[in-house]
Length: 237
Image 1 (cartoon, one colour):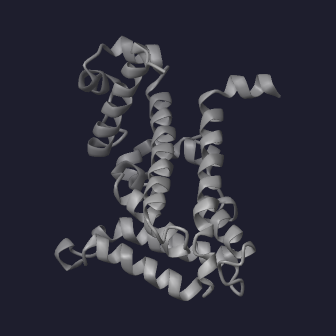
Image 2: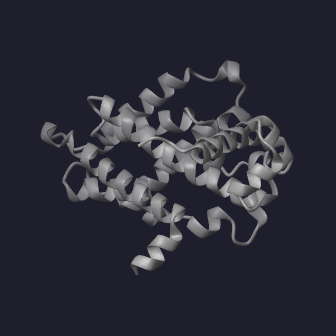
C-alpha cells in the first residue's frame, strides 16, 4: 500500500525529534526546533501532534516497536537464536543499535528530562513489572518448554538479565572507553555464559526460543496497534 503524504511527513517529524532529543534532550528541544529540522512549519507539526508531549510519546512508541522488530530480525538471522544466550545477544545488539532506545532503557534524565516527572508519563502508564516483561515471558515459556533449567526462579534469571543489560548501556559513565572491551566481544561473551549456565543440554531444545520470541513480538505489535488506535479498541469492546 502506498504511503500518504501525511504519513511521510509524520515520519519526518518523528525522525527529526529522535535526532534532536537524542542530542539535546527533551527539555532543550522545542517544537520549533523539530519543525525546522523536518523542513516544515511549526503549525504543520501541530496538525499531527497536539503537543510536544504527545509527539514525544508517539516517538517512544515507534522506537519500542522498531527495537522489537530489529531484535526479532537479528534473532532470525542467528543459527543459535533459539537459545537463551541467542535471544539475549540479539536483544543487546538491538539495544546497542538504537541510542534512543538505550536512553529509554536506563531512563536517562539527560535525554528524558522533566518528562519523567509527569505523574502520567509513558513509563508509568505502560511500565511493565519484571514479572510481566517480555524477558520474563521468554524465560518462563522456555522453562515450560523444557529448554531452560527450572531450578532457578524465572524472576531471578530475568533480574540478572536486566542488570547485565543496564550495565552494558551504562558502563561508559563508569569506565573509560579505552579500558572497555570491544562491544561485540562483550555481547558474544554474555551469550556464551547464559547458554552454558542455563540452557538444557538437549540439542533438540535449541530452536524453541525463536518461536517464543515471534509470539512475544507479535503480542507487542498488537499492543502497539492498540496504542496507535485506542478509539478502535474501545469500539470493538
